Image 1: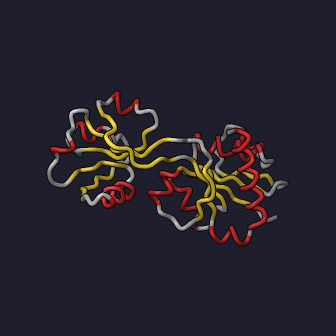
Image 2: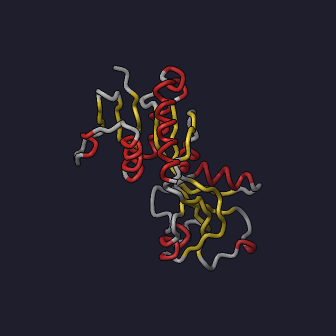
Image 3: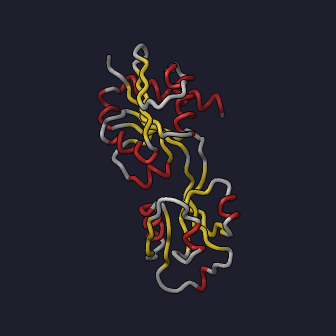
Length: 212
């Protein structure tokens, strides 16, 4: 049996991603049971779901450990992996934004801007495109704290509602990019398993249309 391997980022992406596959006939009863398993198979349907950390989905797909992945555009932009980005799923919508304390005055800022972020490539690329050099400070969490304690001038982060920023005395000073959940495909798999993968992609497109 030739399986189609699907990498799903743990959390909401995995749940919503699996629901789409289920709607197009690729269900897997084990996936719906609460457990610590990371691999779920439906031999009859020839589908195998792999649960990984969201940031690792592009790596699994690029390396061929997964044929298809569901991952946020933010992760795709930061990872810069060699894969096909096939489809915008339309959920998980948010924005990359630059945020700063409410008292921050960009026009008075002199010298190199200090930018704290979990997305150093995205931040560097964005400010480079504007001809501005920055000092990137890579953090793994609680990015909002950085400008409050003087570690950075601004932050670059994903903003969904803005409530976390507001609660920490920050505000968006610049919107950068819109992001949402995407379907990505391994380049070799797209050739060698083309018929199966195309059928899945067309099925997902139909689900998106029905839910629009």
